[in-house]
Each structure stands twice: as structure tokens, then as C-alpha cells.
Image (cartoon, rainbow, N blue to C red; front, side, top):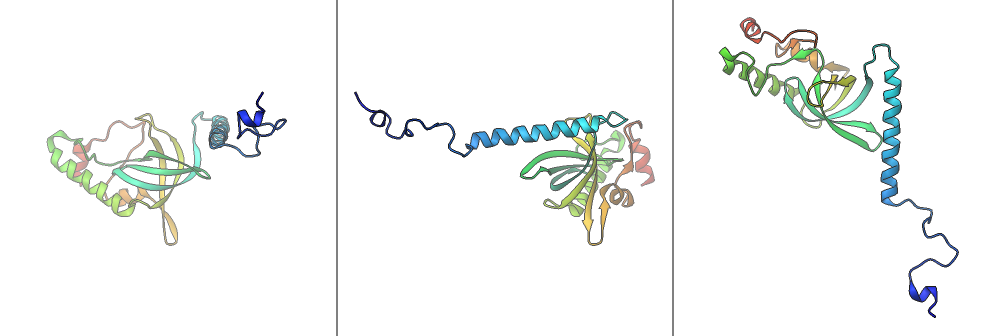
Length: 191
């Protein structure tokens, strides 16, 4: 009868547990990372749900610009945890910028689209791809899985809010979700 070594030449010696060699497999490490991330997110959400207003808000995250979608929406890579990032669409809190794909004032659609393109171009100039930013007071947006946040970038001696940069340049108007739609035709007349 053949010995164990002859049947399975690479098998560990008898009496030794083959499953535990002191190292985690790549699969086990990924499972552990997923478990730790899920646990951290659950703890964060549980803590946030204890807030009096029942909305889930997260304090501050470092992120990097991937691309500018339009004047008030960015695609960013967010640093969630050491070694863990996620790519998200972020709507800038407190403003509405003219659209770039469809005019919000049908009678003057060409002017609106030009204004939207100008707003997008200005944001691309101020926040080019690769720009490090801060996202503050992040909360889910009811539209298309994106998030709403205050967006800031570092400029030499201080942090600048994208909201203020666009308002100061006349490329956006103040807006909150409890307001009705922006009357863009009227706004265009004041430009």
C-alpha cells in the first residue's frame, strides 16, 4: 500500500493542519477588509442616526476631482478608509447652475446652454482633474444615487468654497431643496 507522501507528494506532513499556515489568503484578506469596511460604515450610520434631525450626515472627507459633470456637479474619488476609495457624483450644496445639456428656459435655450457651458468651464479651470478637495456635511441626494456636500479647495492660505466662487462670478444662483425650481428665464434677464 502506498504511503501518504506517495499518493500526495505536496501534502503537509501528517498531524499538521493544512488550512492554517499562519498567513491569510488573498480571498480571506479581501473578506476581512469588506467586513471591517461594512462594520465601520454601520457604526458611522448608527452614530449619525442618533442625531436629532434623523438625517445621515458625515462630517468631512478628503477627495480628488475626477471630472466636472456640470457647474454644480462633480465626479470625485473619496478617501473612505486607509486604502479604500470610492468614486461618487457630488452635487454642490446651496446652489443651482445652468444646465449644459438642456436649457431650463426653452424660449432662450441657446443662451442658457452657453451660460451652462461657461459655468462648467470655470469649474474645470478652478477644479481641474486631480485637484485635492474637502467634502463637508455630506448627505444623500434623492436624485440618481449622488450625494450633496459643501465642496472646498485649498488656495495658498485658506480653503475656498466652490459655492461662493460660482455665486461671486454670477455662474450659479442660491438654491435649496425646499425652494421651487429656479426661474431661469427671469434670472437670465438680470445677467
